Image 1 (tube, rainbow, N blue to C red):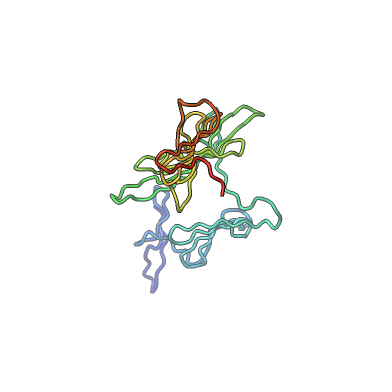
Image 2: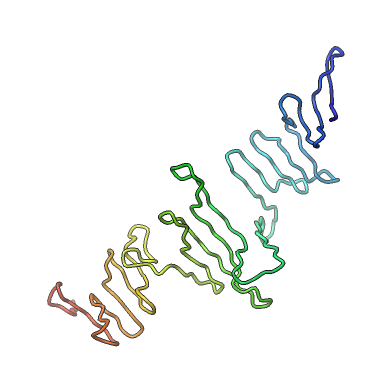
Length: 239
C-alpha cells in the first residue's frame, strides 16, 4: 500500500492509504470527505459530481446541473433546452443483436414490502416489440398491477393508439367508474357486449340484437327484446 501521512510537532500519522487492491481509504473511518468539493470527470472540468448542498448530490454536464439526487430516494432530472425539444429524456434502449417479435424493451417496476416484509412487485409498465421487421415496426405499451397476489396485465396501448382492456364481468366491468365500480361495460362472450348496472346486467347486445332484462339467446336471432317479467305491466311507455 501507499500511505499519505501528516502530523503536528513532527509526529506523523497516516491519513490516507491506497491499498494493494486499489482502494482509496481515509484512515480510521474509510470515508472520503470532499467537504463541499467536487470530482471533475473530464479535461475541461465541466463534467462533475458535486456535493455543495447538504443531503444532495449534483451531477453536472457542461457546468450545468442535469440531475440532482436528494435524500430519501428523490431524483430530479433537469432539461435546459429553451426551445420545444424533448428535454429532459429518459431512454430505455434495448441494444439487442437479435431483436424479435415479443421482446420486452424495458420496464418501469414498482416494488414495495408487503406486510410480511417481502419485496413485492405491485405494478409495472413495459414496452414490447410486436413487429421487429424493418420498415413495418410495431410496438405496444403494457400495464400490469398486482391483483390478489398475482401480477396481472390489465391494459395495453396498441400500435394503433387504441386501448385494450380485460373482458371484465358483470360484477367487475372492465370499463367502470371510481365511485361505482360495478357499473359499466364488459364482454359477455365473443362479439357480445354487456352493460352492468349495480352488478346486474339489464342490457345485453350481440351483432344483431339488443335485449333489455332478457338474454333472449334462444328466442330470437335479431331485433329488440324487452322482458317486463317481475317488474310492471309496461313494456314501453312515453310520458
